[in-house]
Length: 192
Image 1 (cartoon, rainbow, N blue to C red):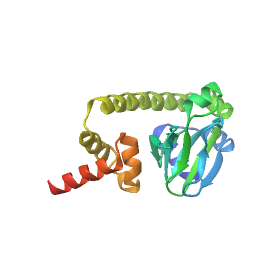
Image 2 (cartoon, helix red, strand yellow):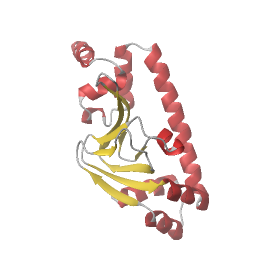
Image 3 (cartoon, one colour):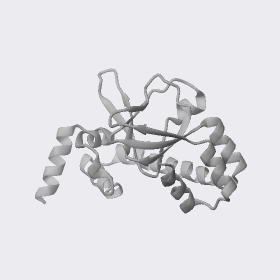
Image 4 (cartoon, rainbow, N blue to C red):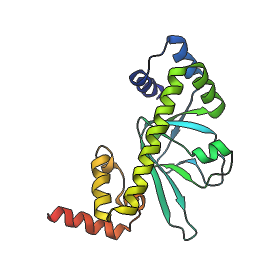
């Protein structure tokens, strides 16, 4: 489980053996079964989470009981509720496992300590946050300016490596469309 995270770090940054050991010493390894929660709405998020195996989703449930998926995360991606973490407020989101998952967790205190003691790690984190901001900005623009078909085609193009692992109803939720609409779009694409 941790080896996947170490390989990820080795691809991103150069670390001394002492730095590697420091990071490992404060990591928490957790396994989740399919449909098991990593975070439930109302709880305060306290971690930085790296997915070493599996697929997860982050979502909100509205007052009608409808799920609105904000984010999918797969191997070598980070997941968590930054708003709850930074403000130490109850989360409005849920994070659960779409498949059996393995995650590497760091408490916020330990994560900040690693960032300050290992500048390369801190720089890597800042680059990830910047990229994430850009991805979210592009997603918002897409959601307000593109047709349902264009959003779906963008999704399967950008996320072809894991799109087939996600149930169609969840993809529809992520795209902000009804499952029936997605079925029609997929049927129309197949006929072309």
